[in-house]
Amino acid sequence: MSNKIGMALEELHRSENDLAGALLRMSDRHKVDHEVFYLGRDLAAWSHLHIRELAAAGKDYGVDLDAEPDATADDEPGLLASLRQKGSELSGREHDLGVLLLRDLREIHRMAAGVSLDWEVLAQSAQALKDIELLELAERCHPQTLRQLRWANAKLKESAAQVMVT
Image (tube, rainbow, N blue to C red; front, top):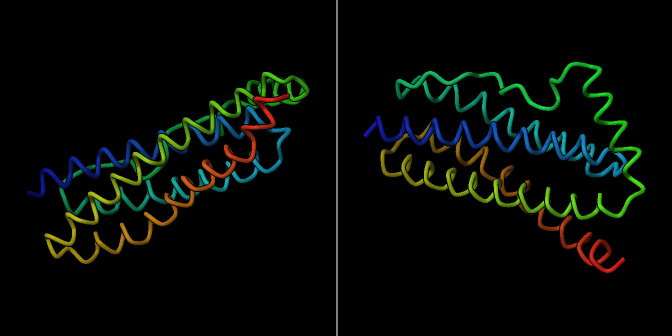
């Protein structure tokens, strides 16, 4: 049983890393939209916290997970990050950036939905195993993932008509 839980922890760890990276890339691409830029970074920080907590939990199930998030857009060398952000600022005046934002939000929503389901599987498994620590981890982290999901959905609804009609 613990081997299956270890596999679930590994998958959730990978998915949280992917979600954090996507949030940071979106944040960099849409720097001119201050809400997307700053909130994207805040939401990625939640995934970074989840990654650390999953690494700690993995030890109880014989899984060695890296407590540090994968290198992402936030960790790019200064020049490359500066060029990317400058490109975002310059292209911020173009309508195609709105379509890109919708695509990015759709991707974030899809990824966060998958992570949410993984947290649910972990919580249900922890309940069945009567593993209080694992259940508490899921109960702490899953609501933040749901918040990431709701934000992407709300931002997409707010932006869709304007982007598609103008």
